[in-house]
Image 1: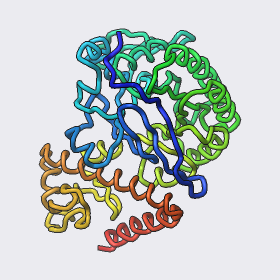
Image 2: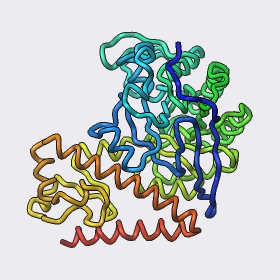
Image 3: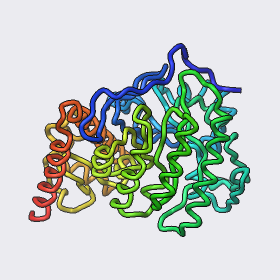
Length: 385
């Protein structure tokens, strides 16, 4: 049983509208809407972007959100989700949704897990119950959720790791990708993405990318990064993989990252990002702004009447003093988490809009340099205060 879908008279398409070096801007179009690229996808792990209303997320400029297969299969369960009309209706988000495969969470959250050719058997972090996730079941769950972009099941290895272990996981992920492709079949208006693995070993990354391209998928992700390695390694792996991915398909860097990570990855040809960082940071008192990162827990903000950013279009950034935000954070008030999450997601979406405009104007590198200079100048001023 699959969740009800919108009118699927149109197909999943991707176009590139402008390039500036390797950076590019364009659009993914599907029945539920258009995703402007480069795009940042707010993470809605358990059918909610934490501390935000769906309408707020949309108004900030998000074209797509991410849902988590592992968490949603445990609660409320994919079959129940389908009976309730699918994830879009359930969370009141009628726009595109990408779901990850659940593989990373199985590896990182489960107390006990066993991986073999058939899939992974694991215990729930919620109640200890035992579950089995095969490539076919992962795609089935994502179909029951009704997601528009579905990810293959893969094995993600934390870095640093032994090259033999990295190679074994990469080859297993390739075999699972083929099984996911068959299980996905033909779903008009939807897409399944493969995930390039290979750790920090260039030859393995290239082998993985070439094999996935041979499957003729609608998009390709770069996975297994931002898992403990330095930024320089992450960027080197993107540079290694990018020439081997088709220019006419979207490229998604999974689980990344900081604003600087995004700028440097866009420069290397990445189109899509997701990360819990802006929402998690907001819940812990950290604000992302065009003035850099501001830790509202610091005592220096206790009597600071300035807003986070007087020029921002976001009320959370513009209409509340740093002193008030500091008070909310220090007293663990829920409003503090809501306002800082709102601010952070606003900043991320404004950054993506600025990136897209700069690429279209042929001045992306200047935009990136100006953005970093503004962060550095504000950080220096705070350090000197």
